[in-house]
Each structure stands twice: as structure tokens, then as C-alpha cells.
Length: 153
Image (cartoon, rainbow, N blue to C red; front, side):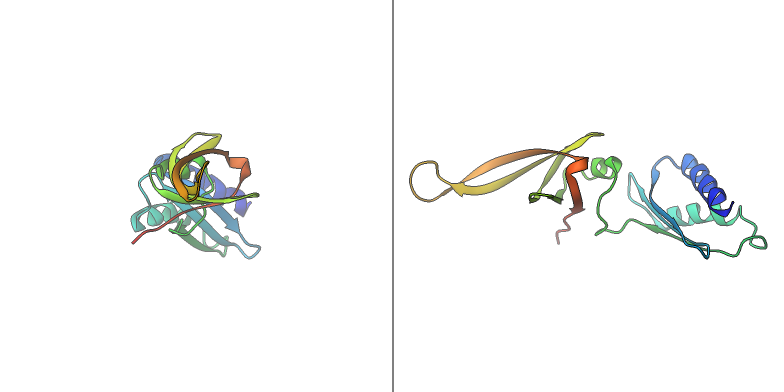
């Protein structure tokens, strides 16, 4: 009953704020609720407060003893949803698949796959030395083990 109530209140809150979306929801056996959200324009403290209040103010604390934590997906949190990839188009990301790890610019993201572009140094086809080549890759989400935005200072 408690889990269903939390999910319903969370869904209703996110319907009011279509710029926010759920990354993860965990509810432990002793009613510790942890919600991780992201937003198309990032997440502000006010956004976390909004989601927290949408749940906290609609559950009777006399009936349920619970704790609630609402947080944003951190800068180092792996990307999980196509919506997260779309908001990071133009940024450099590191994508790990079963066969390789690629650090590249995210050029596009659809509901099925992402497209990456990067430059690599490869041996010349003829003669000694190396040449810089432009590389591209399309990777379907099912093949991505982990993807993170690379933060540059």
C-alpha cells in the first residue's frame, strides 16, 4: 500500500512538472524512500523540494513512518535514459560497451541509439607515421554498459 501510494504521488508530481523525470526510485523495507530525478534544464534545489512536497505532504505520517530523500542525478551519475542523452548532445561522453570504451562527442540521440564522433590517430595506410582520422559510431542503448558525461575544467 505504501509503495503504491509513493509511486502514484511521484507520478502525479512529475505530471505537473514535465521538465523533470525519474531516474531511480528505491523504497527499502523500513520505508526509506530515495528518489533520483533529472531535468531537461538540469535540477535545482527547488525542483527537489517540489518533488519532496508532492509526496511528503500527501502521506499521513501518523499512518506511515518513513524517511524521504530526493536528489538530482549527479554530474558523475551514469546516463540511463534516452532523455538524458538528448539533453547532453554536444558534450563529450565516455561510453563503455562489451568490446570497447569510446570517449567522444555525443552528436545525436534517438529513442534507440546514440551517434558519436571523435578524432583518432591511426597508422598511415602507406609509409611510416600516423594520421588523424575522423571516426563515427552509432551505438544502440542495449549495447551500452555505462555512459558518463566527461567534465572538463
